[in-house]
Picture (tube, rainbow, N blue to C red):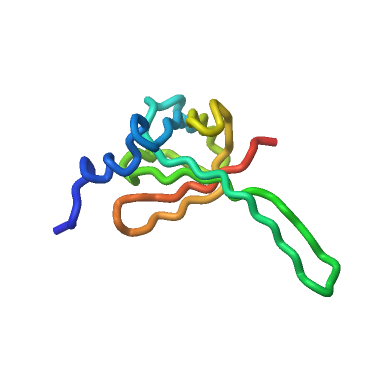
Length: 111
């Protein structure tokens, strides 16, 4: 028996509080909007004495696993509307289900 329900998980991604809204477009077409948490983290890497530096972003949404379309796939289009970034399109890079009913979906800016 799970500790929490799918309705309980919805509290953590509520767009009226701190969440965002994602609209997923898969092979079968556009899906209804779903709640998520959007994260666009800056990454800076340095290899010390090797004279190597790189920077970039780790863009991802955290979403209820039940809200991911059944035909979801890498390179699907996801439009995210957030308070910090406005509205922007991304493509799916990776799925990371956490085993608790939530999934981190890593995104990238489309080519």
